[in-house]
Amino acid sequence: MMKAFALLLLLVQTTFAGGLKWEATTQRVEAHAGQREIRAEFPYRNAGKTTIRFESVRGACICCTSATATKKLLGPGERGAVVVKVDVEKKPLPLVKPVTVKTDDGQITVLMVEIVSPKP
Image 1 (cartoon, one colour):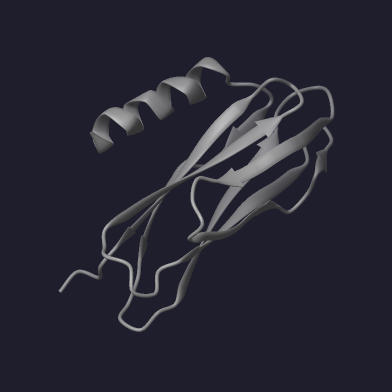
Image 2 (cartoon, rainbow, N blue to C red; image 1 turned 120 degrees about the horizontal axis):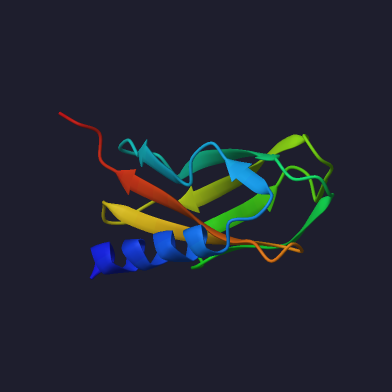
């Protein structure tokens, strides 16, 4: 089920590719014993010729404590990042947390944070 969901999200991202170019839309983060929160950063740049405004950046559940763009308006060539924080305290691992980003150019991107246990 999770693989089908991830495939659907990838198709949505490809369909609505706009002026923002992401370094990566998926990150795998290790959560260590006793860790309360993880942080993932998704860098991007405006590869288009017009200014892009972020309309929304939303986590899919309450354990995604924050998801914010470092810049709300992005001129051509400018860079920024979406920073995602996820509460992992007392959560079973692995976890996959999607964050949906919508911009005024019609682009919808789903960022995926995969949280795993450290390798032994």
